[in-house]
Image (cartoon, rainbow, N blue to C red; front, side, top):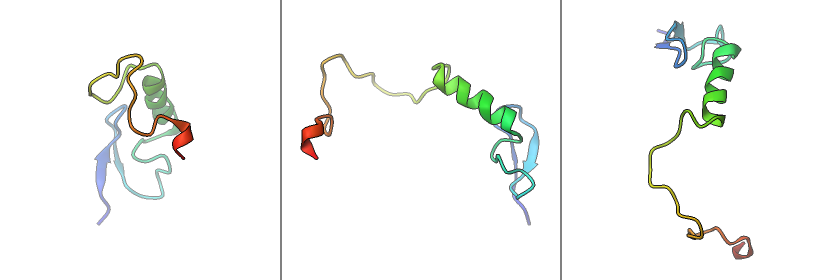
Length: 64
């Protein structure tokens, strides 16, 4: 049995198979639309924004 899911961009139902090489997207177009939304900051991961000058562990490249 092949899993069925909806494309995150256009909601078209697709099968999780080799027929859809851009899965979970139905096409390269939908994949690029999603990527553009992330790059233009229309989408993001919720969380606390870091303040300028605030350092987090691992920020210092000398700590390698």
